[in-house]
Image 1 (cartoon, rainbow, N blue to C red):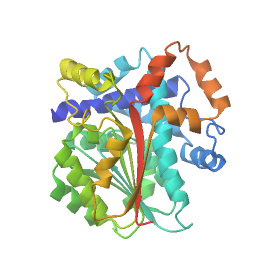
Image 2 (image 1 turned 120 degrees about the vertical axis):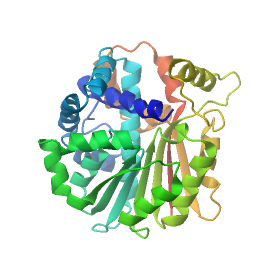
Image 3 (image 1 turned 135 degrees about the vertical axis):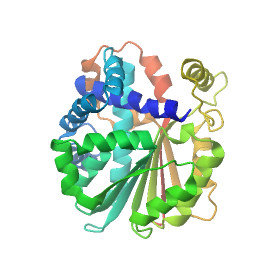
Image 4 (image 1 turned 90 degrees about the horizontal axis):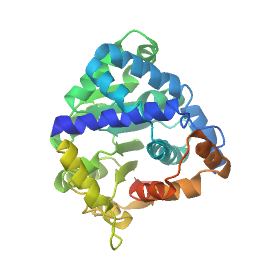
Length: 333
């Protein structure tokens, strides 16, 4: 099962490459309704396409097997999937950037990408924020070893990581083994500094017990933080079978389970994962991705997105994006 879960990272990376090739990403300078957000996004996404294309090219040299799977996935780019990748990427980053706006200029902070896979936010944020004291990537051994080999290959990515020095830390770790995970994090992080935790389609593959222990322990350990999480929800409306069908399809096609998809089937239910930590006072906000598209993206940008590929499945897009959420939880602020 662990290997199957790790292979979902191939889906995520191939989707990002598709979104880049089809010009969804990086976004233009006027994509967001929030003017400050546009400025921050432009700085963060500088060199975005080049960075990901370089990683893709180096992947071919390190693992032709993984490269071949990703290449096959990118051959038929569906607009609905490209929209989803665009929205999840911007939603995570705009949520993180808004939190960072509230930190006094020059104050050191930290970011942790839990279950990072091939995600390259580490390089983006370390390049954009001199005050970022440490960015930690942590994931299963196989994922980290492959990522480490790619970043160590001679080329632009290796040059970047060399420049960042010990500001960038990459750990092997199983998030279900909480004691070992926390020992590794605490060995390189300062629990008193503002810290951003990112989980992108990670919690949905963990049991309720494992994910709740991870959430509670981190909230009780770090005094001032943001948790931003992107995940699917099963759907709670009468007759809504989205989660049931998704869960069955994943089991039939990959023997892959999402243990809590139907349990946390609405935005309110999903929020209780963090609200259950009664020892820490927090502020929880959850939006679905359709709402993010409708209320955070400019009319001009929506027009640009429509021009990239013909999309006749508007209702399918609405249904799908209504079942994915972006959550932000802040505490100690």
